[in-house]
Image (cartoon, rainbow, N blue to C red; front, side, top):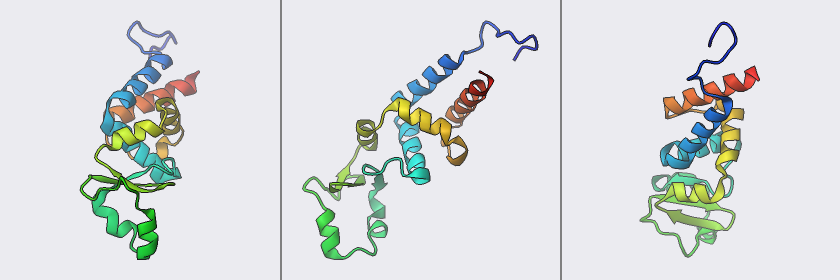
Length: 142
């Protein structure tokens, strides 16, 4: 930052940083799904559409009776898929976690939540975390 308080030619605006973060969330499935999962772990953000690795099936339903478990199964459940989804409509499965999350999440809303809960989240992508830090810092300067 310049000492005279003026922005240099190459400095990004707050709007530039927000657009860059939204672009990452829209185009990088790994960052997108990691952030949805992190927010869900923190505050239940993905309630009703959270995906879990299929190898956690036994652990997730370990106290469940067989009849309760079977009542959660849906016709589209396939144990061969990579992820299971515990929804309000029952248990289903998918091989595309990002598609499930994108069907249920607004990127703008997700970014707002990431900024709001930044200190409580784990970031698997340090470049994205640095971008969020810049956004928070610039937002505080306005």
